[in-house]
Length: 330
Ligand code: TRP
Image: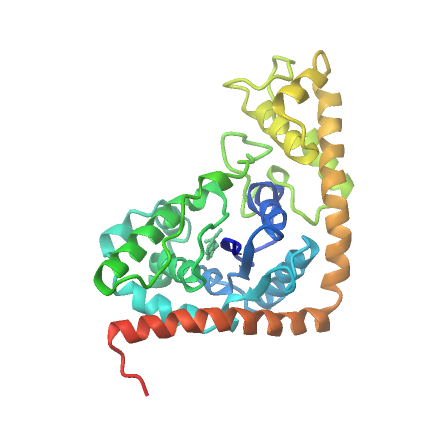
C-alpha cells in the first residue's frame, strides 16, 4: 500500500520555540518514515507582516537548516522553500476566487494579527488562509500536522476543496481529519494561561530552540507556578501543568508517571529536573543545527533539489486546475 501524504510548513519568522517543537516539529520528524512527507519553509506567508529583507533571507536559511537538524532531508521527505515553487501563488489566486469574504473574515488569526499589526492590515494578511489551502492541496495532502492554533485554517481547506470539487469533479484530495496529530500545547512560562510564543515581548516567557543550556535552566527556574507546593496536574495549576507537560513530552513519560516521580518534591527540584529534560532533548538538536547552518553551500544545493521535487508534484495539480477552470492551454 502506498504511504499517506503529509504536508506541513513553518514560517521563517524567528527561531521556533520549545512550544513549536513539542507541538508540531517533533511530530514531523517522527512521521518521516511512515508517511510520504513534504515540508516547506513558508516565506510567502511571512511577508503578510513587514519583514526586514536581510533578516527574512537569513531566517529562511536558518529554518531550512533546522528542518535538516530535525532529521528531515530530501531523501526521506521533500524539504523546500515555498517561494521557490511558483505554483503556490498560482493556485492561491485561483482558489481566492472560490473563497468567500465572509469565511476569511471569520478567521481568528486574521482578527488577532490585524489588531497586533494595525498599521499594516494588508490584503495578504486577509487572504493568508487561501495560500495555506493552496499549499496543502497542491500536494494532495491527506494529513497536515500543525499546532492547534491552525485548526481553523485546516477546516476551511476542506470547505474550499469540496466546493471546488463540487463544481469541477474530483480535482483535489480532501484532507482527512487532523485530530490524531494534536500536538502538545505548551504555554508561556511567565503567563501560563497564554500560548508560548516567539513573538512575546517578555523573553523569559519562551524557550527558543537555540537557547543555551544555562538560558534554558534560568528560564524554567523562573517559570510561574503557584503556592500549593504540589506537583500534580490539576485545573487551576496552569504553571505546574505546563511544566509537567513539557517534562512528559521531553522524557516520553506520562503525566501520571511524572506526578508519581515528583511526589513530595519541592518546586525548585522539580524545575531543575524539567530543565534537565529540556536540555537533554534540545542539546543534540542544537549541535546538529549549528553544523548545518554553517554549511550554506550544502543547504542551497538541497533547496534546489527540494524545490525541483516539490514543483514536480505541484505543477501537475496546478495544470489540472487550470484546465478545469477553462484557461487556454497552448
Ligand atoms: N500558517 C502556518 C503557521 O503559521 C504555516 C503554514 C503555511 C502551513 N502553509 C501551511 C501549515 C500549510 C500547514 C500547511 O503555523
